Image (cartoon, rainbow, N blue to C red):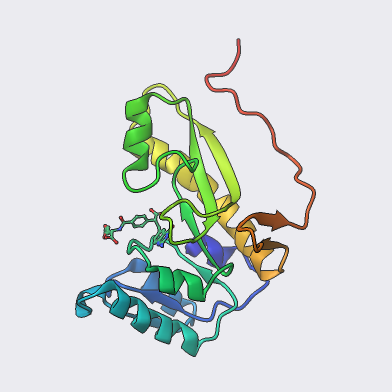
Length: 198
Ligand code: NHR
């Protein structure tokens, strides 16, 4: 979230909303003069009721775009459908590899040599929404979950502002078929070989 604030995006950040009253991002938002709200999931006996309260709070601001950042509650199909094509998440793996939790530990356990992060549209299918942008990083000898997480996080802070920028400018969209279309030539795309060649 801080990386998004620093990125000087072509949009106004309407509000920061958390399900946890002690989320650090709330204080950061307040320090930037951004309105905040807490909708505590524990106050709601069912996910549908939590999501309805969350949507009601969100809709007070009538945002064009919704950005999940460290948001850890699975959202119901009704919620996701309400914001179709406008709701994105960043996940710390190269999806569709390692959906869910503890991605870095699982990558290390499997011995994969390339790991990374993915920005995707949120759909009811958890961590399987259409991919907008990904960054790959090498897994290095001696990596722990912490060192690997830090390497991935550095790239998260680069690709998430890019994805939000495209979405705010209407340069990326989710089409009727559920595919991502981007109004740009896909450039860059450098190969990553890990470990490197001799
Ligand atoms: N909701 C939908 N419908 N689809 C997605 O792709 C979502 C989503 C909500 C959150 C973020 C995701 C991640 O990047 C995300 C993607 C939480 C869980 C989870 O198991 C899974 C994936 C993600 C976030 N949550 C538990 C739950 O019962 C609670 C876990 C906890 O509180 O620590 O909701 O990682």
